[in-house]
Image (cartoon, one colour):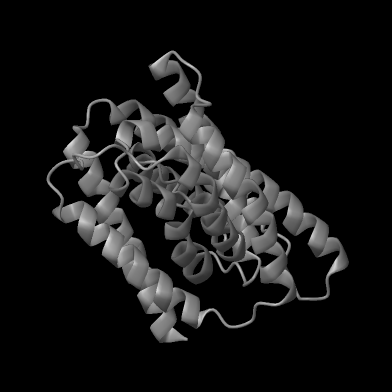
Length: 257
């Protein structure tokens, strides 16, 4: 039953979030904890397992639809920041981090602000997009947070980049590719630390992660296929509402603690 629930949850989340460049792993947290019984901190690498399985189909689908290299200059710079950042984040999560409530409240505030700006904005900014040189340090900071809390970073990177002047069509494949790379490195790091650390059960729940990821494979393919049919302003608002939804979830987690 847990496998079926994880599969359906992964499919639905990926289908809704992939057009906006977000894997949706953070939205699986309440399902994993409340319905599937995945303990903390094992829920963090389990989320990364979902990304590992779900995001490749979206990335490949974007590659086929664009008929060009998915490794754009934007994607390369996102990778340069998120990959080392997620390693640092995983180490912090396993070795030093105990309380999470302060992060949840802060993340809720940031995402709520980003989401409100995206929902309220009618058009892309007139000035040029954020310079590529600024992308790696931003991505590195997001990667650290993603490694700590078990998401690839797309839920933060996508709204930041769109507000920075990039189109949703350019951001989505780049953010998903970055999420895939960060999640791969994160899972490997968790496995290495899990074999040597005494910090509790940090091994992922492979059954839940793979089942949710299998659903995500289907959902991400559907979501990537739908993106070209969704107008740019609607994509921005979709991402904005997703950011607000995630912010509400983080606020709840912070208040519950």
